[in-house]
Length: 171
Ligand code: AMP
Image (cartoon, rainbow, N blue to C red):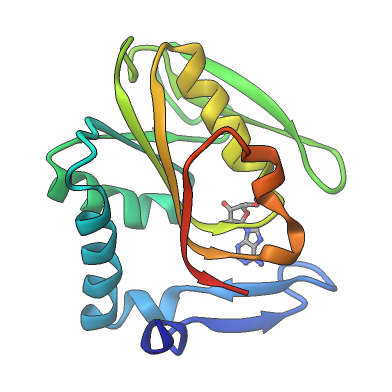
């Protein structure tokens, strides 16, 4: 995974002081490295009978769509409030300071759907937990959560104990 790691740049104090932001834009500019990341997910999940890939705004979309296509699954975006045009359900969750909310189209997940959730970074796990709740409210089954990076020191897994979780790179 070292060769993938070198395409992720640490940016200190972004978006605010004390945060080390993991910038994936160098990875996106390198087709070989990006292909390797997508292929790893595809080979990991190709036998899991996933029929929906769900990803959260906005970096999750960049990985979720190519993986969904390769798995021959549908892609479902989860977005910040007011962005999805049709009927939605929403889920609030806590941030370090304050609260946030995410939405999904009501008809995006059907009962019995086998769902893979993808995002770039697992940090405190609050975002991913909210997405699992949205999927389950609509009757879907969360088969797995897959992250490119995991900030282990923030212990996001503790919020997601019930699930099968994987990450390519651990910090
Ligand atoms: P959390 O809910 O704390 O697990 O945060 C996860 C969300 O915030 C993901 O959608 C990430 O894209 C983003 N995120 C959190 N921490 C970082 C970081 N250090 N660098 C880049 N993105 C981050």
